[in-house]
Image 1 (cartoon, rainbow, N blue to C red):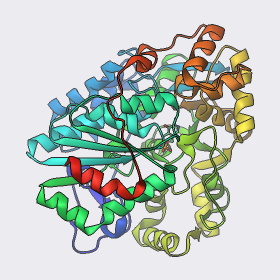
Image 2 (image 1 turned 30 degrees about the vertical axis):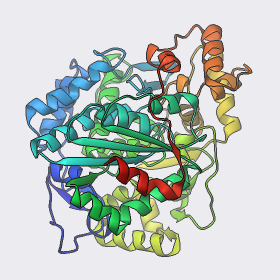
Image 3 (image 1 turned 90 degrees about the vertical axis):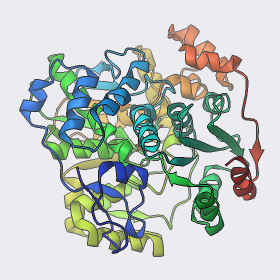
Amino acid sequence: MQFVETRGNDGKKPAIVTFSEAILSPSGSFGGLYVPKSFPNIDSNFLTKHKNSSYKELAFDFLKMCEIDIDDEIIKEALNRYDLYDDASNPVPLSKIENDCFVSELYHGPTRAFKDMALQPFGHILSSLAAKKNQNYLIMAATSGDTGPATLETFKNQTNVKVVCLYPEGGTSDVQRLQMVTEDAKNLHVFGVVGDFDDTQNALKNLLASEDFNKALKDKHIELSAANSVNFGRIIFQIIYHIYSYIELVKNDEIKLGDKIYIVVPSGNFGNALGGYYAKKMGLPIEKILITSNQNNILTDWIKNGSYDLTTRHLIQTISPAMDILKSSNVERILHDKFGEKRTKELMDELTASGKYHLSEDEIEEIKKDFDASYSSDEECLEMIGEYAKKDYIMDPHTATCIKAYKTLRDQNLPTIIYSTAEWTKFSPTVAKALGIDAKEDLNALDLISKKTGLKIPDMVIGLFDKPIVHNKVIDKNSIKENILAIL
Ligand SMILES: *Cc1c(COP(=O)(O)O)cnc(C)c1O
C-alpha cells in the first residue's frame, strides 16, 4: 500500500510514502492526511475463504493483502493483543436485538471502549518501528475520556515511546479518570487540565505548533507522532471488524454471502465510519452506512444537505461525550476519495478561513450514495437504553444513538449491524438514570445496575477503585509546556 496526501503535495514532503512512514509522521502537506493510493478487493472469494477464520487469521490475511511494509512477525505480535479481549477466540461478539438488527460489540478489550480495537495492535506496531529505528517518539493525546486510557494502555512499558496524556479535570467519568491516573509505567505521564476538553485540545494544538517546543524536542532527539484517528495506522484496523461482523452474519445463517446489509455507526471523528466506507469501497456488500450522532449533529447536516458550518455552532455537552465533536477529522478522507485532492484542499482551506463550506448539489448526491444520517437527543438516548433494558439488553449512551437510525433511515428491509462503541460500565451513572436507578457516582451506579440486571462488572473496571493513584497533577492550561518539558 502506498499513501498520498488529501490536500496534494507541497513539493517539500515526499509525494508518496509507505505505511510505516505514514504512521510515524501522520501529517501531510498543507495540513492534510495520508490516504491509500489504491485499495485491494474484498470479493466473495476472500469472504468465503474466511468463513471459518478466527479474527486474527482474517486480520492477518487482510493486512497481507494491503501489502504494508511491516514484518509478518510484528503483524502477528500486534494481532496477539486481541488475546487480551474477554474471549480471545471471538473478540467482537454479535448480539441479536431484533429479527433483523444485530449489535457488533467492539468494547470487550482492556479499556472497555472500541478505541482498543485499533490502538492495541497499532501501539505494538508503532513501538516496534520506533525500536527498530532506534528513535524515541513522543505521543501526545488530549482526551475527552476514551482515547486517553486506550493510548496509555497500548504503550505502557514500551521502550522508545513516551506518552503524555491530558484530560479535562472534572470532564470525564470516574472510571475514565481512574483508568488514566492509575496507569503505572515509567513512560506514561498524565495531567489533569483545568478547563473543558476544547481548552485542553486547543492548548495541545498550540504547543505542537510552537517553535521552542519543537526545538526542545529536536535537542533531545525526540520525534513527535500522533495516536489519534488522523493516523492511518488506526484506520487500517478499523476496516477489519466490519468484514468480520459481516462474515459472522453469514456464519449464523442470518444472511447469504453477497446479501447487502446496513451498518449504523455512532460517529465523532469519523474513524469508525471511514473504516466501514473503505470496506464498502473494497467490495463488502454494504447498502449504506448510517451515521449517528448526538446534538452536536454537524455530521447529520453534512450528509443531509452538504453543509459543514462551524460558525453557527458551539459544542454542547451531552451524555455521549465521545461524540461531542464539531471538527471531525476523517471527513477529509471521504472528501478526498470522492472529489480528489484539489477540491479537498479548496474545501478544507475554506473551512479554516471562514469556518464553513458547502458541497454542490452533485457532490451531495455523491455522498448520499454511501451515507445517510440522523442524531438523537439525550432524552431519546435514555429512552432507548430503557426500552432495550426491558428486553434484557444493556447498551451505553453512544450505542443508543443508533436505534433511531435503525428505525427511521432504512429504505429497504435489510439486516442491520449496529456498532456498540463502549460498555455500559464506562457511563454507568447515565445508564442508571435510564433504568430509573438513582446513583450519581460511578461506583454506586455500577453496583446498583449490576444487582438489578445480573450483569457482571469486569475485574478491570471494579479493580480501578482499589488501585493506587500514581498521576495526581492537575495543571493550568497555560503551564502545559513547562510541565511537559520538565518530564522529557
Ligand atoms: C471514539 C468514540 C466514538 C466515535 O468514534 P469515531 O471513530 O471518532 O467516529 C463513539 N463512541 C465511543 C464510545 C467512542 O469512544
